[in-house]
Length: 630
Image (cartoon, rainbow, N blue to C red; front, top):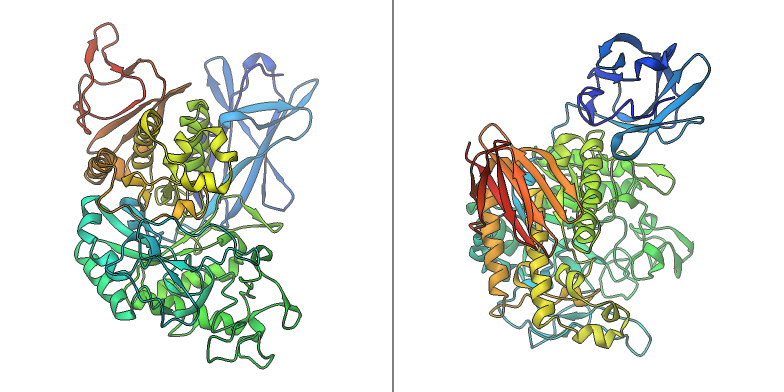
């Protein structure tokens, strides 16, 4: 019936306003079929997620070039996920108009993929201070220590590395287990001693992986939610760190691990290291109902079947009181002591109701408290355990970890076309409320992923080699130079897209590493990659002092093959970001007459008289951040 798309969800002529909308906002839909088709009727069908669609007849609204324009207004009443499509009826045939690539439509004899409309509570304000600043992600045991900690004095045995530069233990013990009980002694005082360093990177948020008492070095097996791990320091150290960070304009957010806790904990106490009556020890334990035993005490639900991580019943009233509702709940206690927010581990394994209650309690304690979720996919339409999640309708998450950005950046630099990266980002921009999209935790590495530098430089055979090989493998010479060049490009994208660029500790210093625990090596104090560190400092300065990069609009100017060009702008400035992944030079034309190179990387320019724009020669494997002077 139609030879071209008659609806483009990202075109304001077809759908206004752009993207997600608050409940009660009028959304105007328009389709543009060719006049020669002589349609008799066009209907918009729209439904709330899980419900039957309702039809809304579209009325003829004039002519646009060679096309008719059919229009209808729709007002979503409640925050939810809505889906829509169109049905076009001609004299002899009826076609479904469904979602194709890049938001453009295609016609089908049967209903295909629907368009998504995210509707949120406009009265809820996300904690947008997060997205405006740069974040530094600290894996506490491996960032900085002020002294070698004692080997004794802990509830369970700990192996302590005297040598800060040791490789973390990666071989299983005689029972075939990797215990993760080797420690390097990174501490709160160590972080405190490096605040000037973090300030030199223009960091405004410190995000800590877990700092609470636990058996393991990663501390995701919480032993006591209300106690700082003794190797990390004391409650007073935490308060001092938050206070000193605040003087430098920095905030602190903590990792909350609430879907499970530790086998060796005050709550479960399977090893008997605590004085408490744990659920493993007695069914009379005050914590017994937190857990789901199929056969007490040795058979119980655990996170991904790992016996050291017993799962909790998050909606158990006693658990809710302890973590969220009580005056001295875990959530409120640490906010009161100086934290500004929480990152929720495995948020897709926490019930919506739990997250909503947690958010409300955090806001009661601090009205601008931040709640960030660990979600690896598009979080707007995430289905977890057969349930559609409601992260962004209002009152749940202020942000999520932007794994799609990480995946897109590393894929692009690994050879996938720039079109794919742009499409990933445009999907998020269309599906997320604007405030959330500008508040994302933009990552290229975390404690759960191989180091970005390693991903961009390691050979295929390195990944398939033995663990001994991966423990010792290092990029050197030309391989390191090539990986570093890609790291410059990756960081440039990370720091210039909407959201908070989040540095995984040591990435800025050239730390390498494959999977856990090799991605959790210690920060190389005194042996940093100086050129990479200098680049991050300059990049952080550019990001911090640019209003366009901090909160301006986004438009992809060109995304083709190895060339990615996008524009950020606000009422004060206009910035163009150019990424040339190709080995050869590319010429890019910008709609302005002169530019300032914000990173001072140079590059020849000339004015194109016939087009009235600026033609720039961009060398291969380089990036530019350019502010338009006019």
